[in-house]
Length: 215
Ligand SMILES: Cc1cc2nc3c(=O)[nH]c(=O)nc-3n(C[C@H](O)[C@H](O)[C@H](O)COP(=O)(O)OP(=O)(O)OC[C@H]3O[C@@H](n4cnc5c(N)ncnc54)[C@H](O)[C@@H]3O)c2cc1C
Image (cartoon, rainbow, N blue to C red):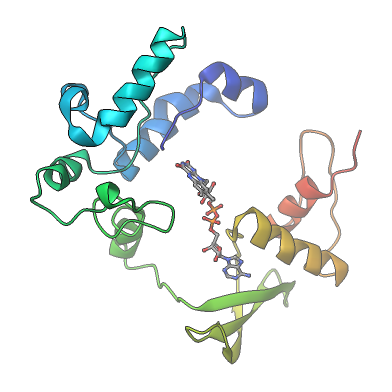
């Protein structure tokens, strides 16, 4: 699913973010970059694979519930070929939660090739960050373990860098930040009030938001 939230909800939940900019620039840009699309409504009405979706929709409508189509990043032209037996099935083979072998416009087909084409990206797989700490000046030291495909640690590495962006998901990022906080590695957070955190680094901005005192 690739759903743009209702603007009223967005404005209520994130009042400090410029909704005009989000809805005129960033959501359209993200949808284009991700290749978001909708099922062909005429095909939906007769395709065998949508038989049960039609049955559910009709039952909902009979019960007075409106329905809507949900945009997503599956290639619907590919799905038509799957249905016609002209391409290896993926969506129609029940693939989804663990990834699609075909048909899905995943990040490996969209954002990652675009980032790679800049020549400024190196993807280093099978590495687990274990700690980030301030290094000399405004730099940071990132400690990591290199794993093999069974998950065993085969090497440890340290990298010094000017900037660190945490993108380890809500659990992974929180785990790293909590561990760093406990080790006293996050530094002093200053100038932090309800709406604004002034900090010397992204780490501290994240820390400020996560550890802001409850009011
Ligand atoms: C079953 C399921 C279905 C979903 N369906 C949808 C959907 O249809 N539409 C939608 O919009 N959202 C969906 N979501 C939510 C969406 O997947 C998440 O919101 C999104 O993936 C979060 O992106 P992220 O980059 O923040 O984190 P993630 O995608 O979780 O990526 C974090 C990455 O960091 C890695 N990592 C963690 N710790 C470390 C570490 N210490 N060192 C190095 N790497 C680390 C992880 O291995 C992972 O690869 C779904 C989620 C689930 C679980």
